[in-house]
Amino acid sequence: MQSLSNSTLAQIVKDNFRSAAVLEKYDLDFCCRGKRTLKEACAEKLILPDVLIKDLESVIGTSPATIIPAELEPGALVDYIIKYHHSYVRKEGPQLMAYLEKVTSKHGPKHPELYRIFDIFLAVKTELDQHMLKEEHILFPRIQMMERSQKEEWGEFEKNIFIKSAIQVMEHEHENAGAGLAEIRQLTNNYTPPVGACTTYQLMYASLKAFEADLHQHVHLENYVLFPAALRMQEEQTL
Image (cartoon, rainbow, N blue to C red; front, top):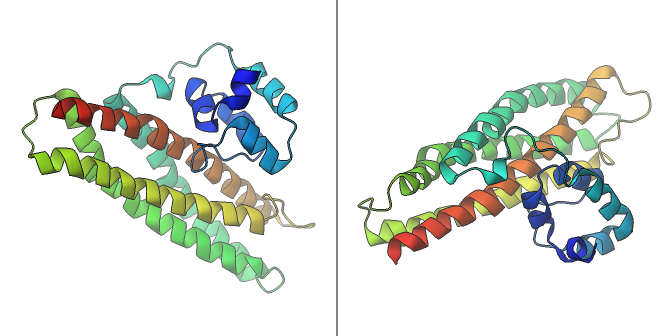
């Protein structure tokens, strides 16, 4: 119990990806704010650590899934992120925009927070679309090249500066997306539809909640698994 209390949220999810669902249940951000210890996060949210730890222990040690993303090699993890998380954003983003346009046009006058939610999600989606292209066409191929060959003939500038600076940009954009969705969570009262909300309204909130949960896992895999592995490979090349 003491070990879990003093572990960071990011490490807990890295050690057992099933714990992500438990942290989501308690609204604990394990990606952009994953450096907090469990004890610190519980204090901020006024959660009893023992209750949360009991929930975590109920999933830790269960039989593993076929694929455990955090255990993949960097190149395979890149493929996993693109296949499961980038594709999710590209599929769900446009559908969510359609829900937002329909619900906002109909219910915006009575629920003015919808206009702000619409603007935030549009900004998040627009930045994520560009963000994923930069990863897929620039950063991710470099990471896979490093894994394939420790003798790749890049200049010292590229090896020492490019990867690190590119990762810093990606992490900053992750923070922007996380902050935007966190604001949406507040504006929607934890994705709680108003009394009498129509089916599309309810579906929109459920989809926004699922989108944020997927982004948390997406960002966690990049910030705390893939990017550190890439930086370690970079260091090995320059020794």
